[in-house]
Image (cartoon, rainbow, N blue to C red; front, side):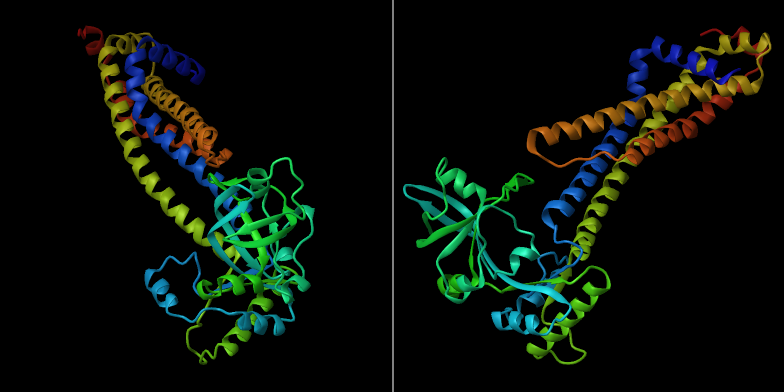
Length: 410
């Protein structure tokens, strides 16, 4: 029997028993849809994290008292006991890193309150930065200028604000030169950052940036550890050399003993993305495990349905064999029917999985991206389930004796 003819007969059989076919592939639809949806979310979030959250560039490194991306509880608790990084630590790194194009320092408070006249906005990220942080983070402005060394040296009460500050507090007003209050202190707006949008529903534009020296003057008693950032003169080997120079400078300044563990953490874009991808891959593998159970259940259901189909069509099998059909033809017919049944379930699973992911993206902004390999893998896995669980019913059908099959009655 030609393969195309086998597929046509299989589709006719599935169409003749619509409800049974739908119930047969339901578990496969759920399993494939779950995998496709998770892969779509993981791929989308990985790309979004790389682009929006850890978008440091391949030539940037960060130095923390304890890394915010640490996954080991013991390491975190031990890190909390370390001395805070200070401006003196920043200056030591800045002066001893010839492979660094820029070295900057930053402090932040995510609970700031900003007021302009009678309007106010809360939960604003207040950042105290050195002017060198602007090229490190590739900060772009839509108006005005960035903080400079004079502002830092004079502890000037000037501020660069995010787009949310302008849109919420002074819509339709030129913000440059206007006075705002940040946690009760008065600042003059000298620049406005370009709109960045949202990250997982959280705005990236609700921030203000002031000179780090002024930040320490205002928040000194409550200031946290300084984050030191460096931008190498180029990526690759230059980044490794810059990191080594910064590490040696900071170890020396903080009097870390030779051979002892460092009293700080260093991260790069690659290491931060690696931590995130390890986490997302663990989540992905857990979902794969659950989906495999669903696929196995779906395969068992298909096998049982095909066994029922063999019983129902015993006389048909006898007639086919009586007019010359070989065992291989019968085997192929039922095996193709099993594979087609599973492939239909896989195709529906792909459609529902992508549809679910895109619906969630439209409703709540969860990033999603569907890799072509995921679609192909879903269909291949579905077809494999059909082959594996369809062999036994197909083999049983092919071994029927034609005389006994012609005498068979339900």
